[in-house]
Length: 403
Image (cartoon, rainbow, N blue to C red; front, side, top):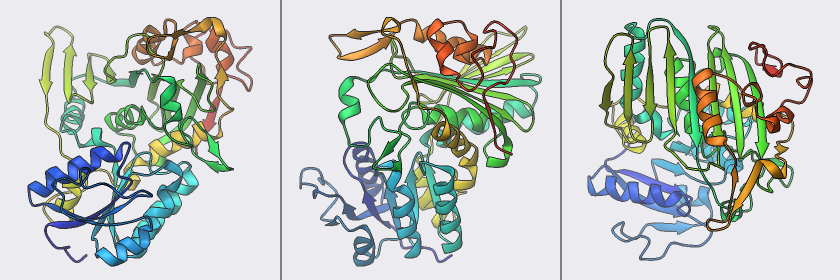
């Protein structure tokens, strides 16, 4: 692989919405002399104010033509989920390296088409799970490897967030499972709280597709949308451990999401947006630490310069994409009954009563919602689960085998 010039010439596809974060990050890295914004791909060109401090990059709504005319060495793709594969392959065909926003694709088949195409083209692709750039991740893995928790029993994750009704009107694809016959899969687990899923799998050491044995899903919705806003998933790995992620966008009191590793002699809690770690062990006082974070575009630039190992290659998100596929192929989310939620008139959002504690309990016990007792969760497990005693010991029933 020929080393690209420095600063790295970059094209940004999707510079509004979450793309504004990437624009600001490119400005930061440009000030450091690491990257140069060569072009912006947007339907409506950015204004001079939006481009302040970034010079006069070329702008076009034609991504391929923009890559050709700018001679970009790398592209940041922050566009709707269902466009990721096509744009990634457009860049790969031109030898352009990639930072591809999460989730990398709306289905496992599209993910494989993207990953295989990128590999065949010989370009580097970084998947945009920023939490996996946290230096806490390898530190926690080292603590586990050193036996600080004893035997790892499983990993839980809790994400209790709030999104108002306008959130689902922010884009034509928002809140959809499909749009015009094309998979979108914009649900709580697969998009806003996708980092919880990917980080939990990473701490377990189960990041590849082949690390996943079975997946159970429970998808529900309080909002008048097609996708899920209150969900949980339980992955059983080929090592026999369980990874359970509980998520909601209808929290009563939104909180920082976290991942917790359960061991026979202790536990580690990781608030991944804060890079904060709490280690608790039997017979010892709690220890809290904060870690730095490596920016993924900076890491990509360093990797292309030969000074850094790539942090989030496509294959290391294979297990996450198996979860996306399980959500995609699951029955449509079950509407919660009117008595299970209420409308917060001040914030114009729907709130599921008691869901904050339920999300925490699922992460603590590695249980699904239906196993924790709320009457409204019993409808989330169609396909034969209705006859299961909710209070019975854990017994996989609504599993999807991935082997």
